[in-house]
Length: 186
Ligand SMILES: [Zn+2]
Ligand SMILES: [Zn+2]
Image (cartoon, rainbow, N blue to C red; front, side, top):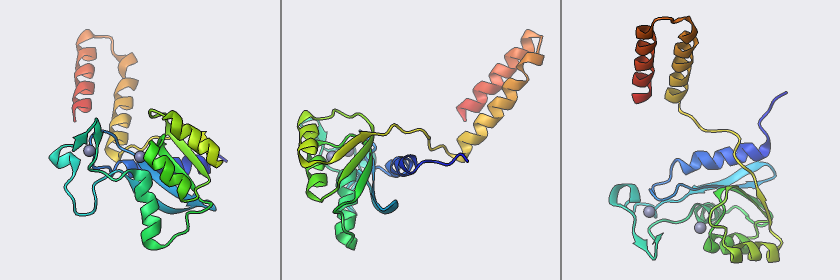
């Protein structure tokens, strides 16, 4: 039976969360898991009720957007807010955590970090994780999150392409090409 693995399931969930990000510089999602159950999740965004980077532009200081709370910290704060123990839990995150998040992750007792994409990978963060005995593993995403519209478009394109071999006239091929371009424009 072909089932999605737990690693991919949680990693896909983090990527789904990243679609909620309000910062235009980078969209990050994080999922905290205990005993194969999701206990919290977060994405990088402004404080509740604050203005969004997507609306007002990023607030950049020293090449960092300072408006947002990072996904990893948001997930940990959700645990603090609603009273879920983080000690011994694991985190799935779309990008390798920054130094600040690395320290928050270690300090909250998270024992493993699974990340999908390399992101600057600060050497001190790598060292701190190692020192603290936090397992760090690269789990590249094997599934993508697509909208139903995209799925519909792909199937229409496939139908269109399946008729290419039957066309012998250049005008018909030209018409097919225009139809395909029109589909992609939608
Ligand atoms: Zn921003
Ligand atoms: Zn961070």
